[in-house]
Image (tube, rainbow, N blue to C red):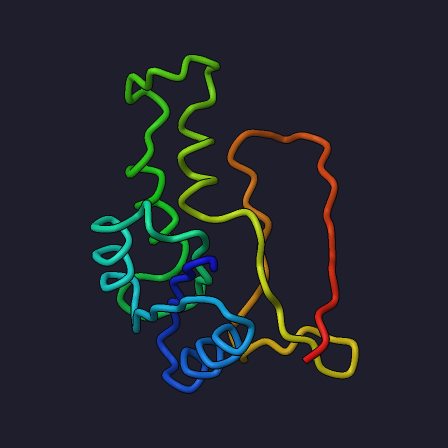
Length: 136
């Protein structure tokens, strides 16, 4: 099953996300803040299929964490894969390509400061967005 890192400074949000994802069979680890998330992720990036990231955290917000991902996979790192977009591939692998979003009464059930962002590391391009409802 996919391995997901959930990063949020609110313990209740982290626990609810972990519980919800585990109910669907996902392996979940949590981090309470950006610095902790960067430490966990950079030590074991290949183990994670996705990162669920709160963009508005104290100490190091989600945008700063995304900046670290940019340094983790810089464009000019001399990759063997020479299509010219190797850094985009590495960032996409690190960020994951799908997201599970709880829905209540037809609306995303997000925490107060949570938002959903589409990260395009190699674009802009025309994309298809697939939404598959899961019933629990």
